[in-house]
Length: 329
Image (cartoon, rainbow, N blue to C red):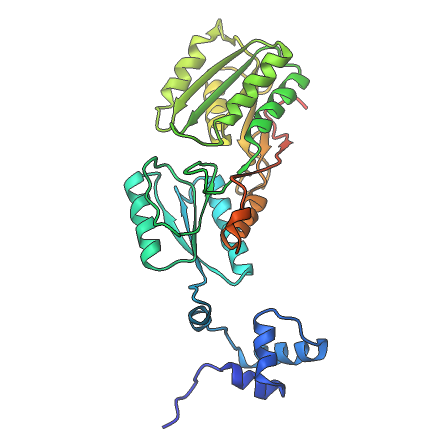
């Protein structure tokens, strides 16, 4: 008995379009054909609701057409947007994304890397928080913001330049004494360069400054204690603050306002990431904007490269500044 509602095949598409099977194969795989043939095949695909069998396609090319993406979480706005753009960029290339949320836990990272390898993914893109991560030899790997090995390409925004840009903007807005506040990973990463850029520009401009750098996971009270220690008679010693992320900037702003210190009237604040409000789509604070879509595109381009000998150890993408109500523009 014939099977009802069987999924249409490439041969069915060829018959419907009145073209050779090879022509359909070329259209499906993005190989140029004549405009008339392209139109016929696309019309047949739409009429039959033909779907490419990525599993069968992968068997022929010895690929699974799947890339694993390891990210701490998708709740943090930056990570959430990055996940969206990684997925969208892979989909445009005909690849699926295996999403793994690690909670920034080293053991969970390793478990997901092992799982990805066992499932024969074609590569791994990740934000790592582990100093002892073991990745099977021969597994294509690209990191974002973190350095695992000189042979592993890292994609990031221009964090050093972003720190410099924040200082220039605060000074342009009339600030006379600045502060830098950050949390960061204890091992090699690009994010730490935000503070380096801040320090470089403050030194060059001859402006006084304070810096508070602590590791990820440090209680927020450390920051409120720092602010309290530099507050006298209701006024902060500094009038400009650069925070390592928009998330930290928002928390600092909220605390200062609870203490009667006005933002931006008394102190101006700039964050980093380019986070936008969920409903208004406006920036949550004045910020150094990361090109998240470009970071995703560069990461996917690298993980799918055929010639790893030409992959750069670091790809740093330019950032921009955007006002968000916490600076005097």
